[in-house]
Length: 107
Image (cartoon, rainbow, N blue to C red; front, side):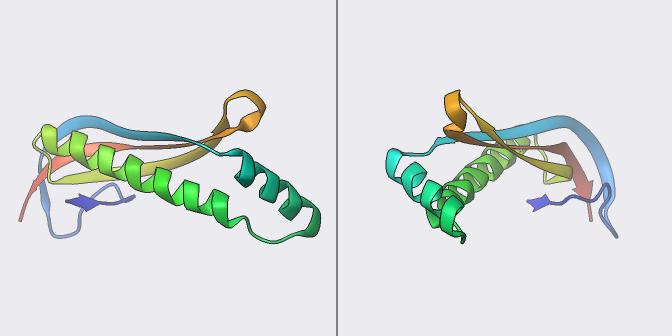
């Protein structure tokens, strides 16, 4: 499956546009992640625990996007957009939302 941010595929002919597909993942940050992130806010540096959660969420969202596209008979997803948000009370959850257009191409 080709997944790309571009709106076309070089040297491929789009046979059918199958619709918009979406993958979403919401991950909760635990108490220890919040504590260490607060310390990082004060002293500076990267928060490995939050980065790990974002990576997991992104992988889950991409897997959902691809599964939805395959269910429609697609072999590519074009014009992919990735959004990150903090949600929940006190911003305690991380959300990744990915959307794009499922297509079937020849070539």
